Image (tube, rainbow, N blue to C red):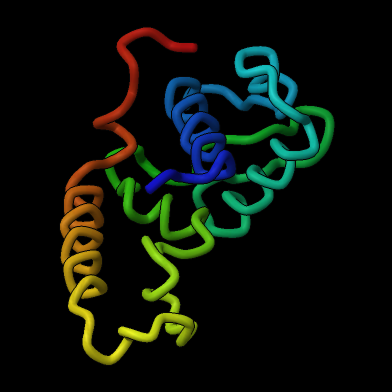
Length: 135
């Protein structure tokens, strides 16, 4: 399993926001640190803002801020918001392409592993992954 670049960037934006919780920041501030596509960064910030994880302030003194305390944002919540799906194999998408679909137990094994992964992420928060030094 590999997470999308969108999820990775969302994590980095939220870490940046948590490390700068006493001040507003801009997309350009984040981009100076991570040097990624500004357009991609804008999509990530928009998603995080619509989900209530970031607050966006308009105007002369505008900018972005973390909307909640880092300890109230679970890693599972972030990934559930940013990942398109968690199907580890095509057979988990109910595509019907596999001739073994009614007899195979592999999807059960994958689902069990995915559930353990998500349970672990539910117990970890944004605060738990903050680096010691601000970015």
